[in-house]
Image (cartoon, rainbow, N blue to C red; front, side, top):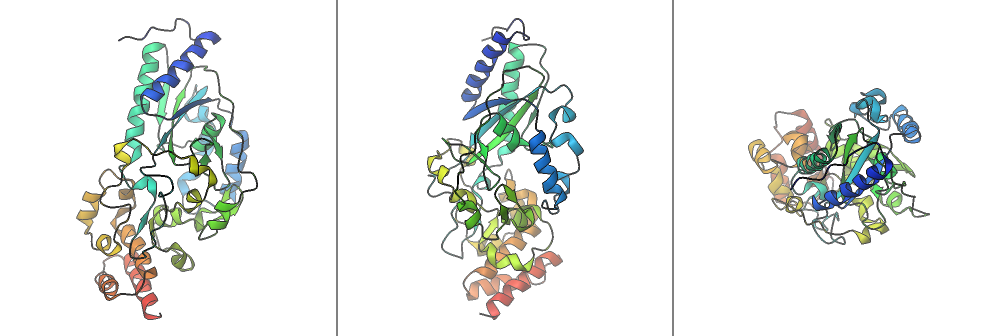
Length: 361
């Protein structure tokens, strides 16, 4: 059924009406919340530049590659006046079970967001559908859809749009839903009414800071990526510094500890999206079984998964560390020895370190 067009997009009442329609459409498309922000991010830009200047981004060179475009939406997409920000819950199981590290050290821990299918395509398609509905309703309408696909300061924009506040662990937190959700954006030239930004409700709580295994949260709202397990197991492509290897435990892709302890996550709701449900037993995977995956098996079983982006070598690197931290067993020793002559140094080095851990116990 065709949507009744809004006659004049420049009048405030019609923009209010349009924003209400947009929120309703977002709900129909499976988003849990939508907010609208302007493009003024000067305070966040200062914080971001200071973070880069301190070198806390590690080897993530792409963070500084785009100049001001990450912090100034109109520099990235000329004509941008508003940013429509959405969130989609991804928790596939009850909140009290999510993200916890298996007590059995022979099992691996994969960050909750990566246990199912990659969210990027799903959210991008939904956002594109939302943009097309807006386009059917009002013209002209210029826009670009983003889901972690361009230099966008998405958490800052979501905070301005009222979706939550940036917590002391640097993740976005929502009072009604915690922090287990993905973000996406539509940059547009429409002068839509903006939402009030969210207030900070962390208070005096420092649970996320205290629980971090590698003390990566060096101060409230400041994360040293070079110490963060998510960075070390996902973004870093070379050797994991030895000082952090014992602290990684059995985390083989990401880390959820700072979210698990956040009191606001007691309000988190399970997602109804089937694509976010765990695949291939990645909610409690056997480390030895994963370690024996060939490169072809890795590609096949991580197809459509966020895990695939790290490649087979880093996958083996991460599992080697986890096996080195596991309780000694002949099966683990045998598995590690099977990779001692891997063609890549980054794998051999971590296998040798893992074997050494079992020898000195």
